[in-house]
Length: 221
Image 1: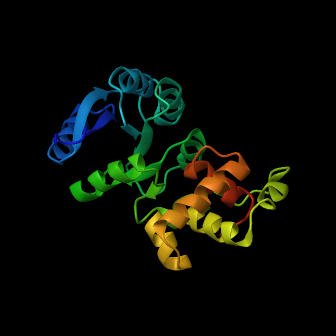
Image 2 (image 1 turned 180 degrees about the horizontal axis):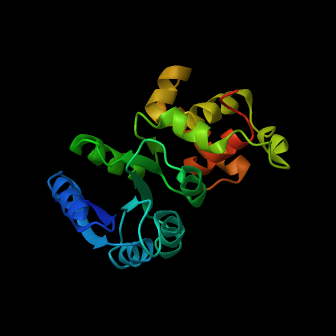
């Protein structure tokens, strides 16, 4: 049997040396392969579409089309691709904008090779991933707990008590395995709950679930 197709990765960063370093790390990982490099968000979207990318590593601040706008362009050009944002610091003023645009996670540029590889695989697997130092401060600092959007309470009213528990765990950035351990259920059951939650709330993925949870005050209060 042949090896499964490696995950195809696009690196978007305006600094050539950073792209070279990331490429060396990723290409050394089994099952991962860099298929293109880009210096801004627009080029990243074009590369993602042309190379059938699975994951795009996107720097937030780049000349021309920056990372936040780039997330949307990637989703338009290659809807199947997940985007992981690369940040220099563990808090970034653009984090919420990137979340709303559909980013699947945030990784600090000082992350280890193992953390980088894990972030790529987690994003491709559908998990929302934050660097450990970012997980809670990042979302709370930028959402600022705004008033609930009109209609939000009614949307959450469609969830069962168990689904609300899973919804809150998603918002805290827990993986399926971690949710299962916390709520004493198997991973397959967790996946079923998540599928139902997204369908009931009309959400595309876990990222939108996190944004909604914090905007309506479902967690962190």
